[in-house]
Image 1 (cartoon, helix red, strand yellow):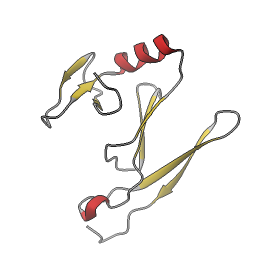
Image 2 (cartoon, helix red, strand yellow):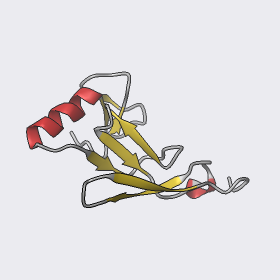
Image 3 (spheres, rainbow, N blue to C red):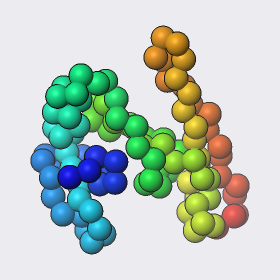
Image 4 (cartoon, rainbow, N blue to C red):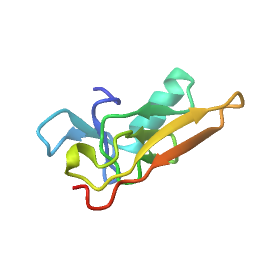
Length: 102
């Protein structure tokens, strides 16, 4: 299964079918296992609308970044961009949604 296209879910462990009928959902244990196996610290993904533009999951081991505020004119979400400096510190620029732009 694919961590980048499947959706994280706080309520489960392992993998499960996604209610959307597309792909799968996975728990924090999957992220932890993947990072340990590949000697990595963070998974970054970017295809799921999140309200504040970015959202951490699994003890900050996975982040979803979504850069389009007011996505498709149907959502009241912020957008965000992440930068990583030379010390691997992550910082975010949040693009607030425009009120009334639904």
